[in-house]
Image (cartoon, rainbow, N blue to C red; front, side, top):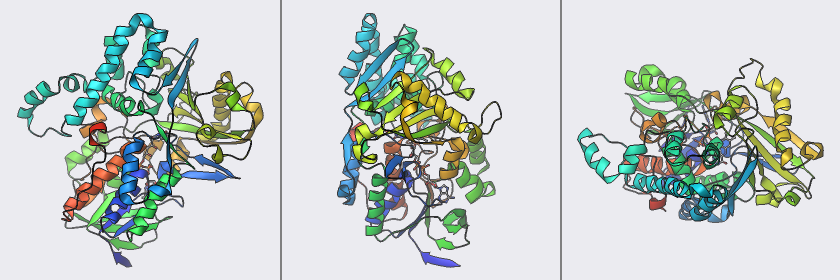
Length: 508
Ligand SMILES: Cc1cc2nc3c(=O)[nH]c(=O)nc-3n(C[C@H](O)[C@H](O)[C@H](O)COP(=O)(O)OP(=O)(O)OC[C@H]3O[C@@H](n4cnc5c(N)ncnc54)[C@H](O)[C@@H]3O)c2cc1C
């Protein structure tokens, strides 16, 4: 059965999918969005339990100003309220702790106070990060003409020098004390790879925007997703939940529509996949339809690590401990030792956020809501299925934070835990990948996937693409994809960039 004709069909309602769909609908395109889950939003989805609202994954959004600009342009700014968080995090190490404020100068000062003898190195390291950030803003996403490399190297020396470095490489060049290196990279769990593997480029981009102050969306990030849905529907688009796409249909090698698991067929000259990239090409398209080189490249790419997530409520007065909204906890000074904990299936790369500090109305009166996360492998090395271990893991993870909130586990009024398989089940991101491809130097920027796939009319939007992971980056991906689709459809409409200088691509 064939249903309706559309200008564009979007597969998946993650922020990368809803943002692209909202922009296209706003620009007069007839858009259909199919989401396999009953809930909308992918990793931005929030769930409710007995009067409590939990974000399933996202706790902070960088570049709130850019997102606000987009919402205003779409005319849905009143549908959600972004509030700026006035600090970044606290990171606890075995015998020291750092409170990281927002603002570059304040952030550097917080580290200089603890390691005054390394002031010069700290300033040079963070200045370098800033320089990378600025040069990236001027860099092309891809260099197709090798003869241009010499000129680019002259114009963008820092970027060219460090684009293939890991965070550890660069810290080793500028910082001496191993404890200072550990502190300056305390944010690595946000990027799912330890400093020895993490691209310095990706780190520079993340910290570069977070340092200005992350935002939270009042009422949960579901409100942000819902604002995009309002824009889709106001633009005449349709959103179908519980509608898994099982096949992307092709005609003469071009995208022509989708077939759902229920056998319904929708046709359109453009299909945008916000779904897992491997699923998109290997299952929904079929590798036989794709150039062999592309299939080989896809086969070589590695997904990011997964995570265990704990959702908890307590009637303990957590604010009495004067916490940060998010605390990272390290039992080792060496992040490589923490990484061994992660690989061993023990809590590692841990953080705990007090969500009701950002928005008291998320919880029931008199309660605080907490979200704990730990970086985790898809499969436990001991072979024990995660679901059999999840309660013990959740207890151990919360136990780690009793150093911040004494007696935390005794005062819980609610507890639920998710594993890498939960993430995979709800989002279909293979191996429960949290951030698309792993953020290693060989998988960032132009080395991730382009929006335009090898098949005309088939586009990608989301954390498998060149903008990389995180809420604001996948919204940026949605904006860039929509822009390309509008060009492909020959509409002559352009999408504003909102804050171009401050939001560089992860280029080259
Ligand atoms: C535990 C955790 C914590 C995080 N914390 C933060 C944070 O604090 N801040 C931040 O910025 N980022 C955070 N991230 C990263 C961020 O959530 C992701 O990078 C981003 O949300 C990914 O968005 P997306 O649109 O690419 O895809 P997703 O959110 O993964 O959405 C993909 C969608 O496609 C749907 N789909 C898949 N297959 C099909 C199909 N066949 N048919 C129909 N629909 C399909 C899925 O159901 C899903 O809704 C976190 C991630 C995790 C896992």
